[in-house]
Length: 146
Image 1 (tube, one colour):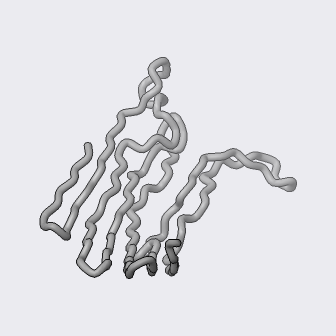
Image 2 (cartoon, helix red, strand yellow):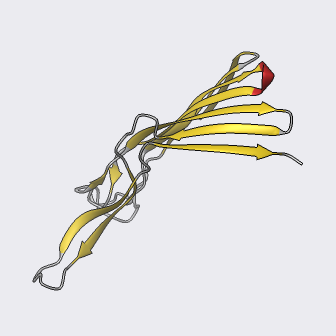
């Protein structure tokens, strides 16, 4: 479902929410989860576009906790992350500041349940491996249109 609303000539709201009930058809109940498929995701935010070339966007990304393996005994962590974009345009010049992970949320971007074994280990170990999500970060940019 997608929602868009323009509250005033300069204030906008938007949101997308997605739901999925992902299960393997030919597997026994309880062992039929599809690994790494979230049941709920959402993106959205609020945008302000003021006169004189000033704009701002506060955005969010959400993904709920999801099964990492078919029996749902290992779960990949969900997250809720916010970003902020500030923009100022003046003629052919544009200046922007982007703040990623505004509240410095600890989150995992990619997660996989994997079986591994080190050289000195007798038995393999099944564990959740992950790529950490972007920490709080500020980017700035300046552009000129020819």
